[in-house]
Amino acid sequence: MEIPFRISIFEEHCRAEEAVAQQILEQVKQKKNSVIGLATGRTMRGVYGFLLDEEKKEPGLFKGVTFVQLDEIIQKTVGEGIFSKELRELFIERLEGGYEAFLSINVFVEDTIKEAAEYLKKVLNTGGIDLQLLGVGVNGHIGYNEPGSERQSSCRVVSLASTTIERDSLPIGSMGITLGVGDILNSKKIILLATGDSKAFAVRQALKSTPSVENPASLLVNHECISIILDNQAASML
Image 1 (cartoon, rainbow, N blue to C red):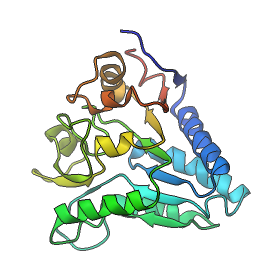
Image 2 (cartoon, rainbow, N blue to C red):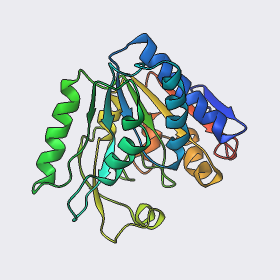
Image 3 (cartoon, rainbow, N blue to C red):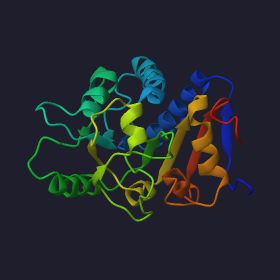
Image 4 (cartoon, rainbow, N blue to C red):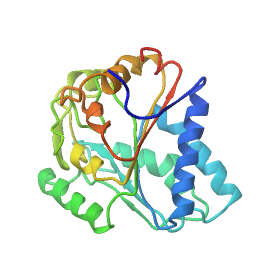
């Protein structure tokens, strides 16, 4: 099966991360009040490091930007969400010139189903996501849209797959809240970043197989403005 879109492949993961950061910077410079969807995980840390370096050179670069959280783990203990805290500490609160807003998912509520619906309303009230940053799970998940997630799915409470629970050392039966595949596809632009050989099979399935709910990342391939950025290891099975 031919790949119908351009993929950028870099020898080293740090160069792939830098390429993603450059696309985000281009978006912000073109539209200073952009709405940017953020993802978490080891893959993204280098991206945020590059963005912080650029913001030090140009303070206030992100002052008009609204950041949107992609997903969150539902916890029983009270406090800030794990991913929300990670985004704040790793990136958002380190922006010296500030930012417009950060929309985070509140999982410490009695009715998480209602929270998912209300969170989506907040995202839509921004005018929609201009650029959504994504990683991909070893099973093809995007955000917490696990295999079986429908193309039209919206922000909701989800059960996490056993592979996700094991890889992230989460309690058995863990659940989360995530923007749906449909919400992600409504973004004006998508950047999918994958690095490391552990992602190679998921990348191959996403990019060279017929789009299927069994590999949610594959549902992105027909988006009108998607950028796929890989390192050599993640691209090794293409």
